Image (cartoon, rainbow, N blue to C red; front, side, top):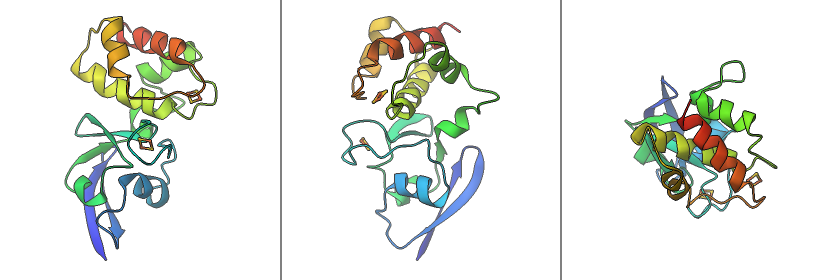
Length: 153
Ligand code: FES
Ligand code: FES
């Protein structure tokens, strides 16, 4: 078994795995009990499993654990907590931008990476940034409002 060391929400951690190709998604949920990140399609097509690697949004279902080694991984738990939400989490609450909430992790993590690179986006830029994240509940209008609100906070 190999051990993979990386930074996780600001802490140094290591994960043991028999399989270097094990998806980072499984490691985050099963080894570290970080359940904000979701398994949606498992094929890189829905965005529910999005986390940040060195500040860039990545699909953790398609990211091998050995690729994460040596990098800084941020999950939605690393952005803020219920008592101290970050601006995106606060905006999603203020706009009630979820129905089932299954896509919410991916929407927020994708938006967090996008806003860190584009601090003053237009609405069209925000729409484009989220085009690869699916919401089967049709909450897109509220999600867009939430990201706009966060971008102006
Ligand atoms: S679960 Fe990873 S993109 Fe759908
Ligand atoms: S709120 Fe249900 S999938 Fe988006």
